[in-house]
Length: 286
Ligand SMILES: Nc1ncnc2c1ncn2[C@@H]1O[C@H](COP(=O)(O)OP(=O)(O)OP(=O)(O)O)[C@@H](O)[C@H]1O
Ligand SMILES: [Mg+2]
Image (tube, rainbow, N blue to C red; front, top):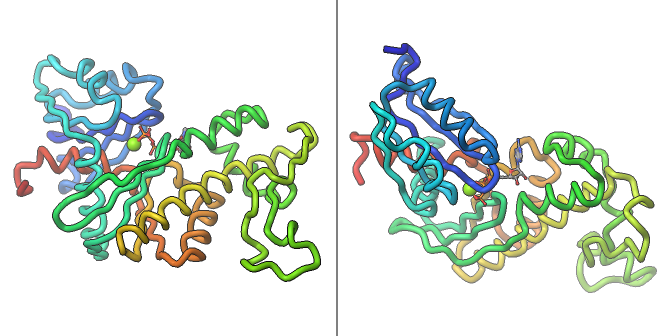
């Protein structure tokens, strides 16, 4: 038997990234977290097979069926699946409880490749809606506008950018007059471009504005959802926030400005995989 063998593995195979959470046998049952690119499902499956000779696996996410096909039938494995929204809900509740922050009525916004918005209560979750503006939008606009295709490079450059060069603020429109709403609010994302091509702008400025567009869209939609549900807290998860200060700041600032309280979960991007793991933990009541 391999000393690193985990008996239980939760997998969230999303549109962009595969998140894997396992309970390590040799480490007092601590959870171990790993990520792979969804473009390499076979590579992720091969890694799992090489690491665990015997395992109980539960898979969720949009690519769960593809992943299941790669792992099902491996000797020593028992493989099941769980619906993504249910897994994410369970994972989020687990992280909140473990962190001593047991919220029981909030809006949950998952900024993955796209963005999904849910109302979570003690009884379960209801999907309220979403927007196609999400992490995939950041990467897509970054590639088109600047040629930057690496996530970390995109964020690093955006941190040096000035959104004012690309976006139009309310105060730019109300030049010399008192605006009826805060002048620092964005009046028009990319509205300052005024017919000029991408080459006119600094890459850093374009990237800062692309991330700002995603952050403000996500936050505005979430806050409207919070108002509709009559809740104060919006919990944000998803890999789009990982090491991404510009996105966090945009979302945090806009959420507070619009009267709601943002909560960012550490390891929140692993919620789906944690929920899948919980689904096959014998000691967890269903
Ligand atoms: N190393 C990385 N490579 C690519 N994208 C990354 C990376 N780290 C963070 N991201 C960001 O995270 C986003 C994906 O987030 P997440 O993993 O939560 O989505 P997903 O589960 O794959 O997608 P979905 O839930 O919509 O099917 C990407 O679109 C990108 O903006
Ligand atoms: Mg996802």
